[in-house]
Image 1: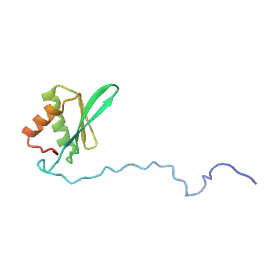
Image 2: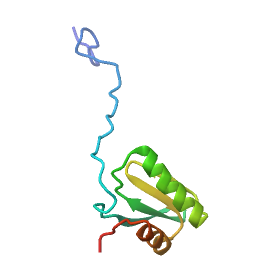
Image 3: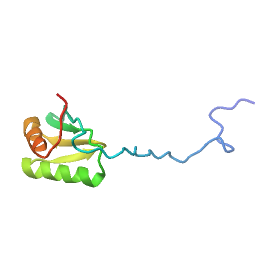
Image 4: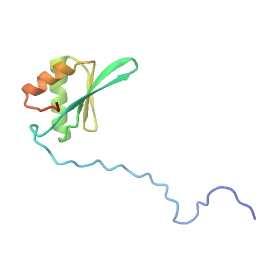
Amino acid sequence: MFEMGASLEGDSFDTKRLKKDKKSFAKIDKKEHNLVFTFEKRRGKLVTLVGRFYLSDKEKKDILKLLKKKLACGGSIKDEWLELQGDIKDKVKAILLDDGWRFKK
C-alpha cells in the first residue's frame, strides 16, 4: 500500500508551540555598561538604537521615558535595545553621559 504525507499518529507529533524563554541577564551597574549606537532605516526614516541595557524592564522603561521626554521623540524597547526615532546620537549620548552611563569608544 502506498501512502503520502506524514503520520500524525501516536506521541511523536506534538502540536504545542514552544514558548521562547526570556533570557534572564544579571543586573549590571550603569557604570559597567558599555553602550553602543546603531542606525537603521525603516520605511525611509532613521531609527537610532542604543543598547544592550542589562536591566529590569521597569528600569529600561524609566530610561526610555527620560530620553523621550528630553528629546521630544518617539521610542520603544526591543529586547535589550532602546529604539528612538530620528538621527539623535549626539543628543542621546550627552543625556546618558550626564546620567552616569558609559559608552564604547
